[in-house]
Length: 406
Ligand code: ASP
Image (cartoon, rainbow, N blue to C red; front, side):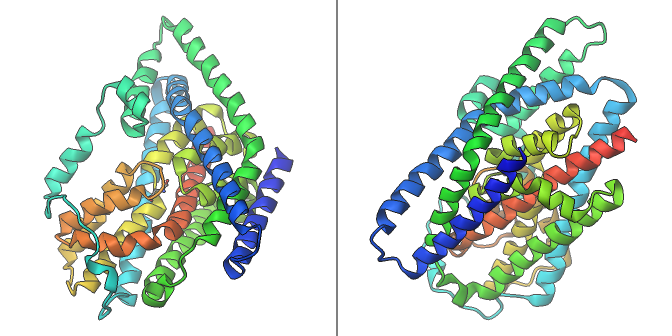
């Protein structure tokens, strides 16, 4: 495990360096073949992570919840997990609102790609419609969610099974044993995937760096810079401080031990695809109790998205600046809640935040065409958002673990 940790780091660095080299010398003879090969390997890596994702989430939440046990401890786990999610997402959004109101990027800027997107969504949506849509999306035929990879309703269903299995009289012991054993099979497959991770991460990063569109920076530089700065501030200062205060785990320890998960998140732009690695890091490197990581991490991978929440709030304010709309305090409060619900509702897949961004824009009455401006830079910003999303999940598991052990 230690070796893989190191290898993932080295291969990420090599991938970025090679990507930069290709950016500067795109005509070198091997570039076309290399990009073709890295594209293929990268896709296979992501697809194999996704292959394991649905059964992993399903079994891990069932096992996690069914092991919570009744009584005081289980309610402490539930409550501290949700409280942690809400508090850290609120901090992230507040950070975005405060700094964006001060820096105000986008005021007086005019951008060419403004009109180039057509969207058929209705142009306004009330906040109650927004909540309704979100609530309804939680309940689905579980076989449909399993087959179509809809994680949020799958989580709801898995929690329900887990609670049902939590029977004091032990009537469902056989079912519980089957789920636990199947979960262990999934973990074994995750271990195999970890062996593939250095190559997968390398391939994804070569491609990502080589295909980055630099011209964006000339027009949108201040916004991109501000958002990335805020995301990094949240990930490098706020989350590690909270972690240290509660668990005494140092930031260095967090980054070194958590590295495989962070790098995979950066390379895949998907918290869900990274989940197998995050689970493995929590169990092997931080030795969190299985019951806690099984519960907090899969839930966090879809619900707890500090980076996405921060970005949705910042991007909505940026668009408001672009169209010359001054959001009142009340509207910013609405933005606060919609950014939170939108990030909770966003699945942990690449650019999911863009889809739910459309809802945020609608609630505020901002033009959906704005997505045309946000989309080209999304690949870049998504890498940072996702890394912080995953960091937030891991920190959450460590904190809940500490709280429930002490
Ligand atoms: N890609 C992000 C994640 O998987 C979600 C998003 O912000 O688009 O965590």
